[in-house]
Image (tube, rainbow over all chains, first blue to last red; front, side, top):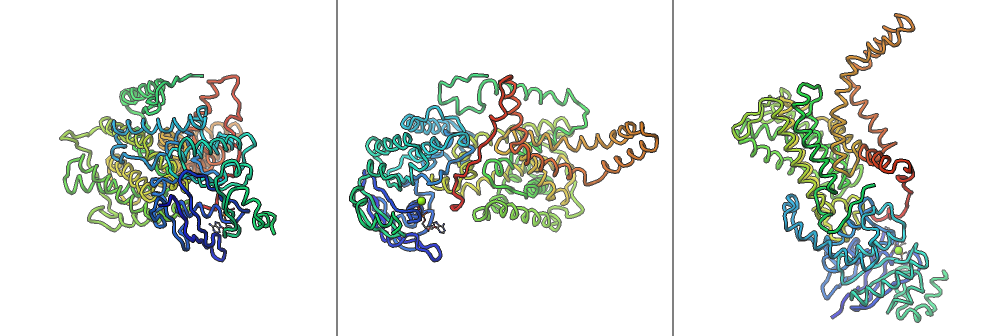
Length: 252
Length: 380
Ligand SMILES: Nc1ncnc2c1ncn2[C@@H]1O[C@H](COP(=O)(O)OP(=O)(O)O)[C@@H](O)[C@H]1O
Ligand SMILES: [Mg+2]
C-alpha cells in the first residue's frame, strides 16, 4: 500500500530530457519537498503529476491506482490539487468566485438544473459557500472576499491560490514554490500554514521550494534534482550537506 | 456611499446585487412596458433593439464570459431564422414548438463549431468561426428547398396559441418577454458552477483544468448555449424583417454583434444590453443626419457666401449618403473603444457612478491598472 508513487518517470521536450528516470514515493501525512537549481525539472514533474503533460515513459500511482492515463480534469476529483509557480488565478473574477471554482470537482448539479436555478442548485451553492468560508477563515482571507484578483497584491494572490487548492478538499496538495515572491513575514505565515495543512487538515504536501529555511522548517523528506535526475534524498539537513547537491547549486 | 450589510450567504446568491438594484430593474421594466404607449410612433425600432439585446447576451456568454471570440454569430442568427420559418410555415408546427426546435438546431450547429475550439485558441478560433459563417451563408444560397435561395422567403407574422400578433406592439411585448427570459436563464447559469467554469476557462485554461473543469465539455456547452440564444433571436428576427435572404446574414452583421459586446463592455450582461442599444441607435442617428446635416451645415457655411454654403451642403450630402458610412462608423467606434475604454459603456457607467457617489474625492487612479507579468505564457 503506497499513497503516492512515481515510477521511473521521464519527460522529454525535443532534445532535452527535462525529467529523466525519476522515482520517488510520498507517504500519507508527510511534507515531501523537491529542490534543485532552475531548470532541474521540478515544475515539469508537477505538470506530469497533474497530467498536463503525458510522460514519455514511467508510471504514476495514487492510492494504489494507476493515474498515468487519467485525463487532467479528473485529477482534482481524485484528490490532488495544486498551485502554480507563476500564479494562475482567474484574474477578472472575485476571490470568492475563485475559491468556489476550487470546488468544481465536487459539482453535483447539471446544466438544466442550473438554467432554472432550482432549489437544489441553491442548496448546493450554500454548501459550497460554507466549505469555502472555512478555508477563508483558515487562511485569514475575510477582508478580500469580494475583491477582484487584479486588484490584489502579489502576496495575497499567492494565499488565494493556496486557498483555491484547499477548497477542492484534496488528499495530496502540490505547492510549486509557495514562498517565491513573498517577503519574510509572508514566508513565515506560509510556513505556519503548511504545518497546519498537514497537522490540522491531514493533507499530504508535495512541494517545490527554493527557500532552504522554509524547506528545513516544514519538510519531512527532501529530494534533490539536477538536470532532471535525482541526486540526493533524505532529511533537509542530509540533502543540504550532500556534496553533489552543493556542487549542483554552486553550478559545479 | 451605499452600505450593503451582508448577514447571510443567501444574499450573494440572489438574482440582483441588492434591494436597490432590484428596485431599479422593476422601474426599468415598468418603463419598458409603458414604452409603446409613451412613444407610439417613434423612428427607433424598439423590437429590433430587444432582439439585438438577445444577440448581445448570446455573444457575451461566449466572448465575454468564456473568452471564445466568434466572428460567425450571424450564421447562428440565420440558422435560427431559416429553421424557425421552415418549421412554422413549411411544416406547420405550432409557433412555440418551432422556435424551440430552431434553438435546438442552432445549438447543435454551435456544438459542431465548438469542436475546433477544443484545439484552437484566440485569433485562430475566430478565423475558424468566420470560415464557418461563410460556409453557412453559401448553404443558405444553395439549399433552395428550405431557404428559398437567392429569391428569399417571405415570413408571416407569428401566431401563438391561435392568437395572431399582427401589430407591432404585441410583437414588441413578445420580444421583451423572450429577452427577459433569456437574461434570466443566462444569469442563472452564470451564478452557478457552469458560469464559474466558463469564467475560469477565459482567465486560465490550465488552472481551470487542474481544478476539475473539463475544457471540451464546457467550451462546447458555451458554444451550444450561445448558439441556442442566437437561434431564438433569429426566429424573432425573421418576423421582424418579414423577408429572409442570404445576404442579410453577412460577416458585417457578425462584426456588428462583436462590436455590441466590446462597446457594451466584455464580461457583463449590462454591457450586452448597452451595446445592443448603441447598435440599434446608430442607424437611426445616421438617417437623422442624412436628413438634416447637409442643409444645416450648408446654412452655417453660407456666411462665407452662397456658393460656399451650397458646396458644403453638396459635399456633406454626398458623405452621409455614402453606403459604407454605417460599417465605417461601427469600425471607428470599435477601434476607439478598444483604445480608450476597453471596458466599454458599462465600465464608463461604473466610473460615472463612482464619481458622483464620492463627489469631491474621486481619483482617476482608482481604475488605473498596474501591468503585471505573472502568468506563465509557456503553459497554454
Ligand atoms: N513546455 C515545455 N517545452 C519545452 N521545454 C520545456 C517545457 N517545460 C519545461 N521545459 C524545459 O524543461 C526543463 C525543466 O523545466 P522546469 O521543470 O520548469 O524547471 P524547474 O525545476 O525550474 O521548475 C527546462 O530546461 C525547461 O526549459
Ligand atoms: Mg519551476
